[in-house]
Amino acid sequence: MDVLSDNTIGSSSDKPVQERLLDAAEGLFCEHGFEGTSVRDIAAAAGCNIASVNYYFGGKEKLYLEVWRRHFNLMRQARIASIDRVMSKEGGEPSLEELLASYADAFVEPLVDKHTGGRFIKLMAREMVDRHLPQNIFLEEMIIPVMTALQQALIKICPGLSEVNARLAILSVVGQLVHTICAETMLEQSNYPEMPKFELAEVIRHIVKFSAAGIRACAEQKEDRVQKTEG
Image 1 (cartoon, rainbow, N blue to C red):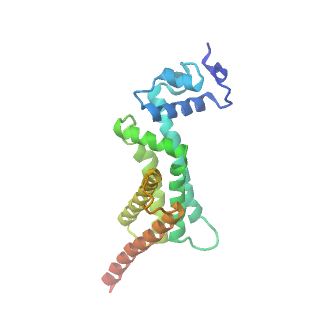
Image 2 (cartoon, rainbow, N blue to C red):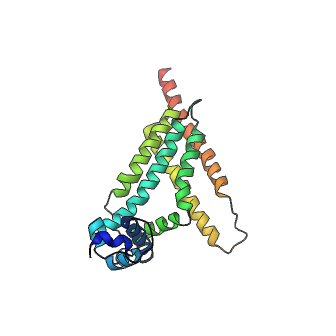
Image 3 (cartoon, rainbow, N blue to C red):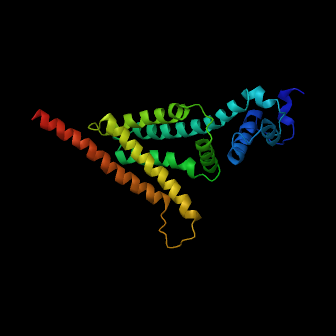
């Protein structure tokens, strides 16, 4: 049977075959891991001929990579767009708080989404235990592009901020956001009513205010040293 006819095999979905395979593979990789998921399982879940995986993706390994890249592309684009939106706005200079708030919202939104966020976190947990991704893919396709864009924006808003301190500030902000997501999940699942609970928006406002003060302090330290040297 022609692989291209798989659009109509075993599924009433109007989605293209590639998208159905990605959806099916992602769900199975989340639940059973890479080794626990077979090409036959993926094809059956997608309603496709088993040859479709090789035809469209070149095998299970490359399909696994594309599942991750789909997440990477969406998150990278959203985060860089959140930076560009603030830095390119008309009518006044962008503020540090605006930049941090826009980035924080773009960072958190896909991760707290009950469907996409839950799947990404499951994939991440599986990958950390049983690695199958190329070694530097997360660094090259997510961290470096986003950190570069945010670092440039921070230095433009706070000219006294060094490149090193800008990178450290980004690591601090990201660390706070990741911890917030993990803590919220833990508190939601806890049976301790006495534990304090905060609205996510409130926590993000705190992170923005706290981080902006620290970033400005780092920028002012460099400016003070320059003034003393010139004096």
